[in-house]
Image (cartoon, rainbow, N blue to C red; front, side):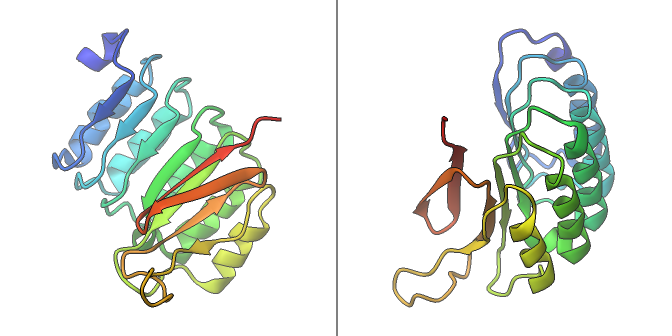
Length: 193
């Protein structure tokens, strides 16, 4: 209800609230008409493929949301495919954070296809909560070769130089600079011309 008529709230952090697919569905309905919210954090909310499908549908018509964080949710390859479809027509989302192990090779492949046409997304973080990446080398190579995408980057442990147990893979647009203030986060912004 309230988010549908919101005219001031630009950032909403609902991380860790276990809203599930039903809550994601309600938020998606609001996002279809909300023109103010630019940052939505839904980390660790038990959102699955169904809730992700609803959010992706809202992204197709939403003209304001620039940042979406779905880390810690089990969206699966199906949810990643739905988000990829939305990215093909969405021109405002610039940052997307997902759980890499949740989307697998098929989800990564769908995102590769979306990056071929999407020009708005400048930051895609596929974070891992374990040492081995679940995204295969072919998918990583395809993401790296997607138009305007840069190479995947694994952040090493400061002590050993090996990939950090809570490392992530981030794909950046060419023309971006990247900073990694900690081993579990990255930021990428398109440089001004």
